[in-house]
Length: 260
Image 1 (tube, one colour):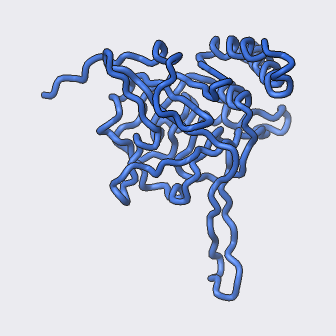
Image 2: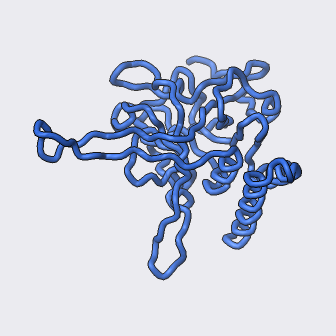
Image 3: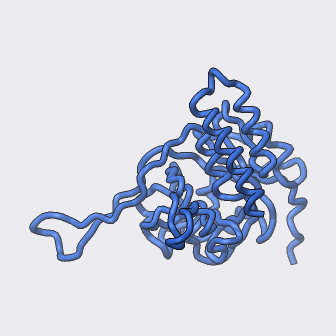
């Protein structure tokens, strides 16, 4: 399994490099990379500036620290889960032309009035994406900004709409005698809602209030039931509607359960 995944990642990285450094000279690179990504359940349109992956609703009634994880991650505190390998998603995002930004920073306060040990948190900065979630019920398409599916219980309102800063995770050494590994693949956490110093996720929220870790809840009024499938779209620009190419990809959840 590890060998097979390694071959896939080599192909993805090679395709991403072609796309990034020789887009005009090698137009076939886009199609080749898109084909390899599709085999890993990642839909893409690099010209239009988006990629999309299948997910399931994981948490609907508990506090959130993450917005997206896989089976290795903190599924008990994540809105969505996916089977897509984090490093595969990262390759697709690199192909959109993203460069890693700066994670949140905890900085000691300076000056005569600063209390001992006092600090301030500087929000993440840099290249980012806008995240959208879609599903279908018959002919009715549901299309939402991801932030609308998360509530701030301190205000009772949806999370502030924002750009999700691209961190790209990082390579870490788990055992001294082994080669470094991709942190998000090992930990399984892809997108965080609350800031974390480690910076091991692929994407992070960027609004200053996301420093808080005990205020984020799923918006059960909008979300499908736990375990139901949705499509998560990562876009360079805000989308006003679901891209036509994804109409055949989004899951049909059928009619709402009858009220009892």
